[in-house]
Image 1 (cartoon, rainbow, N blue to C red):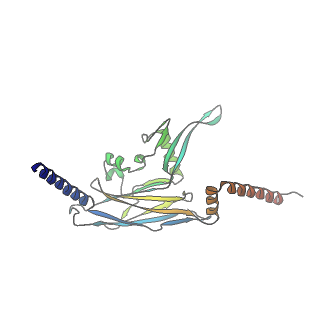
Image 2 (cartoon, rainbow, N blue to C red):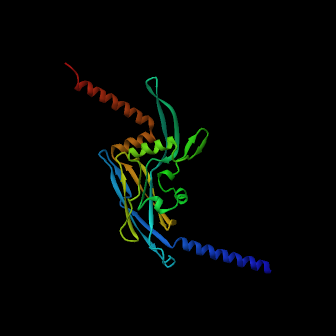
Length: 263
């Protein structure tokens, strides 16, 4: 009987400790919003910039000594499989000699913070929380295995560089602005070639090098008008899409022959 009472008491103490830990972990709460939840892509779309803004809400359990915060925002587009190829010049011709497949990686990836990641957290925390492009997991297929590799891997470096040159991967360590000690904002640039789909936004709040809390939101990028019709048809009815494409090619050729016909 005494043993059972001791076990019950221990369980109650552990449950109480767990409850305190949960309350302490949620001493702050992030309230965020995106300026536009649905971005429409039209034939003349040339890109735009969304604005993410929010605030840090404190409660009675927030330590009085906690006054300064750091914020990291990660925006990731719909995942897809992509390939990076290595070209070498042989016999005067550039040939694809090797390649690496990246599996289910973000088609768009942006990381924003209020100061450099090295100043926000230790290298271990950066790796664990995937702060910075060099720490984001980019799964590759290496032979029969699937794994992420070291940041200076030639294929990984080339993949990140090529996506960055197109404006689809970016890292800015001064993009988040604290308007007040608890009110913040940042811009999310979307280039003209931005992929269509749902974008996830992850916001992480740090203090003294440790993760305090985090939250998530999202927005959608959709095509409208004729482009939406073409995309939907290509996805849902390949035969109709192929016939329409072939007909348009024939009509274009016929019209070109009339315009440039020599009498």
